[in-house]
Amino acid sequence: MKHYVSTYLFLCVVSITAFIESHQDVLTTVSQNKKDTLSDLCNDAKAAAIKATEFARDSLFAKAKENVQLLAMDGKEHGIAFGKNANGNVIASSVSTGNANSATLGNVPNKFADLHNHPRNFPPSSGDVYALIDNASLNNSFETRYIVTPGGTVYALVITDLQQAKAFNTKYPRVSDPGYQPKFPGVIVDEIIDMKGIHNISEEMAMAYVMEHYQMGIALLKQDTHGSFIVLRIDKVENADGTITFLVNNCQ
Ligand SMILES: [Zn+2]
Image 1: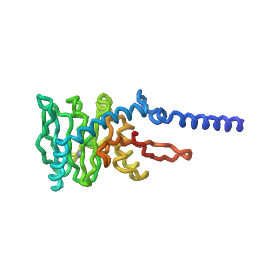
Image 2: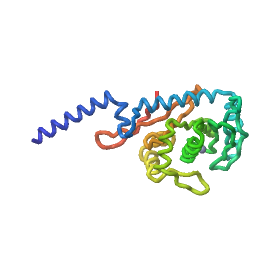
Image 3: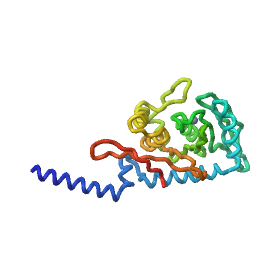
Image 4: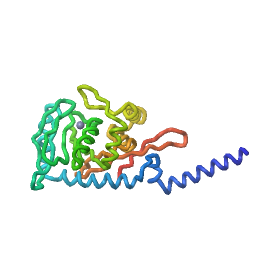
């Protein structure tokens, strides 16, 4: 009997391993109880990344980013909003000045994106996520938030699935933190702390992971040296000994 059980277990492991090898995409997102496979998720995010890349090459964006970076020398957040006028031409708001933790963004007609700086080298925050969902829920054409850090890194948060973003906002409502940006609920905050503290994962990769894992309907992008936005993502792999490893697996 014992032999039978171990043989059976062995066969299971072999067949699971074979399944993993041939269905890696499906397995990775099998817990997401959703239609999406990894390639669907990446296709949606990459389509948004192409749009984010194209607009970031616009001279109006370049000028806005330069203005925000110059003003950022004061250690505060500054923001600018992008929209379209009646003729369909892209326009920008004036640059606003916030405080060390947040910036109120100017308003323009037909707003589709905004840009702000972070006074420290931090990637997009929980507050940025909720603000994106709020803006996109009010106005479907708003789908991108650009964030620039003092080190010159440019991130973009993009909506990939607005219905999913709205559902996330209901299921995991923001926790207000007076004087600061709203935070994620404790379960997500704890997961980020564990990823960073125990597994040595960077803040940006921990953010990318929770965005996908908690189905926020948002992707985290990072601009590369050629100006293209890359879709950041990470896989959580359970090892045979029960330990967890996080592997960077950005959308290709
Ligand atoms: Zn921010």
